[in-house]
Image (cartoon, rainbow, N blue to C red; front, side, top):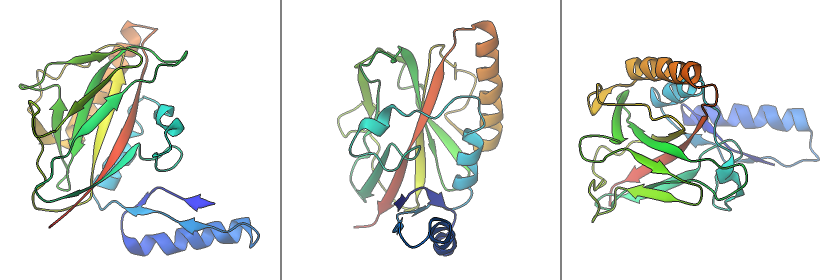
Length: 208
């Protein structure tokens, strides 16, 4: 069994792995593949889980996925490289069209709204479609630079767009998540057919 997920500091990983080994017994080997996601970002991820949207499981059919119910992807990027983030909707019977939103949560407890914002208009994806941002030749290039901290990008897809016109492009993550929770609740109340989901991408930058 491979133990995947995140812990706030490296010292927290061995006790978790040891507890799982003790629970399973010696017949099932446990491989510790936990990643360190420092505070406050790890706490923000816990709050994202309470916004009222399920975590996407579509990416679990991708052999590159990191863990069931875990990261959709890990970006191990180096200083000077460009961080290209992608959102895709599978072409499957259960898939539905939705509006894509991408937020970047940094190590200072702040969030940057990467999509939509003043540079990028809202994007509606249909099943089988994808959208990427961050490449060097894109409208919003995201070049890796110091400080080098483990952080996350979170993608939301909802059948009703959650407007961001009233929000600054960078703001404190806590109040923003409170606002988003209220907006999701309002969208669901206004439209009983409202659907949405989210997934997160682990970003691990390093110096050259």
